Image (cartoon, rainbow, N blue to C red):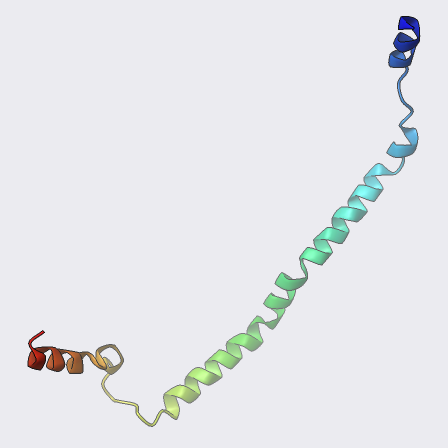
Length: 93
């Protein structure tokens, strides 16, 4: 029995069929995964000029057609702060 187990352990398995074209299959699978993963970043960068154009048009339209626009550059930052101070002062809080 020991000789039988020893002879079986000493034999090397034939892996030639598994190793045949291994690199080709591996490279094909990696290329397939790379293409499927690169879909969104590629289209995002291709559409970036359109997104920027839309944002610029909206910003220009907002700056030109804003009916409540003030000539004070700091009005955006101080808007409502004076009301808060007045209410706070009058209420004693």
